[in-house]
Image (tube, rainbow, N blue to C red):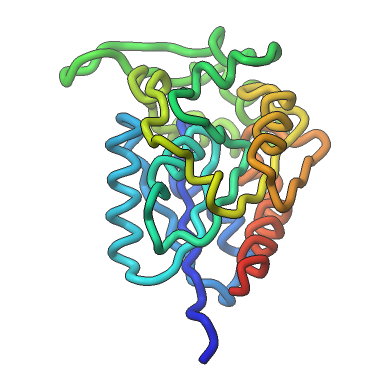
Length: 239
């Protein structure tokens, strides 16, 4: 009896939202069941717990795909979760134990994100941050058509400082036991390309696709490259 087809679970990162996966979903077609989760962007542990609930609701094998901060979340969520068969990192953080999005983005020079952020307090405590709308297109989506980049700026979902500064709590990150695939752009202004290369090599990635000229928003600007990487992952585990 053939193995059950895995469901692809897409987890967006900070300053994006689940509709940012629309082009990827279209290119995956009807061949794969797909769910684009609405990442709360409140804390690594809390966001990972939510994704684990999504996986439990699916009730079968899954491939977890994370964009940007979503990579933090899928790494935490997949820990000791038997349903997860593979991880795909899309311009994403792939942390080791104790590492946060902030520590990884600052490990190598080149990120221009901090200068574009605006922050404000939230009633639950602490601050949350967003990318200033004027600076969003160049910072986040430089290879996205202008009108769409402006729309993305207006629909972005802010993230808490606690989420960006929260470290991976898992004693052993999921990528040490699960196969992983990476796709990233060499023009990512949020996460330096040197960081992407470092994380992919450290994880012993089965597949690495580096896309010339691709911005941080490659789920929107390069959906074909992202979909191909996901397809490779599903096929690589026999799905």
